[in-house]
Amino acid sequence: MLKMVRLHFRRLVTISTALLAAYIVLTYFSRSYKDVRSNVMDEETIRRLIDAEAEAQREAEKAIENWQAAHLLVKREEDVVVPNPAKPHIHNMQDMMKQVFRAYNLPDDMLAMDPPKYLQNFKNPCWYERDTDPPAKSYNHTLDGVRVKLRCLPYFHLIGVDKSGTTDLWARLAHHPQFVRPKAVMGKETHWWSWRRFGFDIWVRNALIRHFDWYLEHWDSSADKILRETVTINNTVYHPVITGEGSPTVFWDFTGWDMMPQNKGKKPEEAFITPHCIHHLTPNAKLILMLRNPVERMYSEYLFLDRFKAVHNLSAQLFHEGVSQSIDMYEKCVQVHSSRACLYNKTLHMKMPVRVLVGLYSEWLEQWLEVFPITQILILRNEDYAKDMATTLNAVIDFLGLSKLSEEEMKKITQMDRSFTRSEKEKKVGDMLPETRSLLEDFYWEYSMKLSKILGDVRFMWQDQQY
Image (cartoon, rainbow, N blue to C red; front, side, top):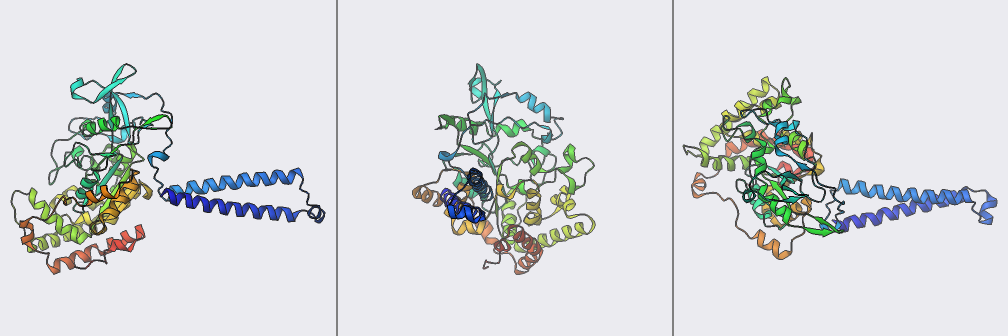
C-alpha cells in the first residue's frame, strides 16, 4: 500500500509541476512585448512565481492527504510518527463507574461516560488506572510512585455476522504476533453490547445484568501483553499490539434500545443504539463485517442453534415451517409498524422460530453507517474467504495496520483445521427443501439488492453461486 502512496505522490508532484510550468508560461507571455524581448522579470513577477510554487506544493500535499484518507492508508510501525507522550492521566475506576452506574438491575448509561484519556504511544485504546487490587491479582506497575494497571478497550470489533466464518477468521488472526485475544468465550465473544448489559442471552431476556467493569475485565490479560510488547520509534517507546472483540450479535441485535435512558420518549428511528455507544467510547474503532449468502447462512444457523436447545428436533420440513412462520410474522409487523420498530422488537425476535431478521444485512449496515464512516468498516464475503483464505487474511491485516506475515507463516495459518464443521447429525438432516430456498431467496432479494447498491458491489447479491 505504501508503494501505491509513493506512486500517487509522484503523480501528484508531476501534475503540480506541470501546473506550475503552465503558470510560468502564462505569466511570462502576459508581460508586455518589450519585457518578453528583453527577457526581464521584475521583483513582483519573481515573487508571484515563488508564491505560485509554494501554493502548488501545498495543493499537492493536501491532495496526498485526501487520497490517504479516501483509500484507508494504514501506517506500518516503521512509518508511525509517535508523539512525545505527555504525562499520562491516572484514572479512577470508581469515578468512571459513578458516571454510568444507575442500579444493579438497570443497564449502565454508557453515553454518560467521559471517554478515557487514551495513551498516545499505544496503538490500542488504553489508559492507566489506579490499582486497588492485591498485586497478585492484577497486571500492574508503578507510575510516579502510584501503583497502576493498564486498562484497554478493543481496537477493533468483528461485528458479524453469525455463521459466516467469523470464528474461523478470528482463530487464524490470533496467530498474528501483534494481536492478542481477550479472555472471553472462544477468546472472542462477550455479547455485552448486544445482550449482557441488558440482561439478555440467547432466547432469554431476564438474565443477570452485567456492568461495564465486568466487560472491561475481559481485556486485563490482553492489556498485560500490550504493555509488555514494545518497539522504539523516534526515540519513543511505542506499543504496537492490539486487541479486539468478535461478538457477532453486535451487528444486528439492538433490542435493548428502550432500556437506554437517552431513548425515553423516542421512536426507534430516533434511538441511540449500540453503534452510538461504541463510537462514543472509541470513535476510531475499526469494524470488520463478514457476510454470507443469507439463504445459506439461515440454514447453517438453524442447524447450529439446535445445540443450545433442550429438545433436539431437526428436519428440513421443520426448517421450512419455521422460515414460513417467521417471514409471515415480520411482514405482518411491518404492515402496522415501521421496519425499525419491528427490527428492534425483542418479543418478535424471541417468538420467531428461526432468526430470518439477521439476514437483512442492508437494514443493519445502514444503521452502522449512520454513525461510523465507511472507511472504518471492512466488509468481506464468506464465499471469498473460503476460496482464497490468504487474500482475505491479508486484507484484514492491512486494514488493522499489522505487520505483514511471511509466506511461510501465512501458509501455516491457512492450513489449520476449520473452527466449525457440520456434525454427522447435522449432515443427516440433508439440504434445505427447494421450496424453502425459493422462499428465502424471494424474501432476501430486495435487501441484497439494496446492500449491493450501498456498497457498489454486485457480488453482495450472491448471484455468483451454484447450488
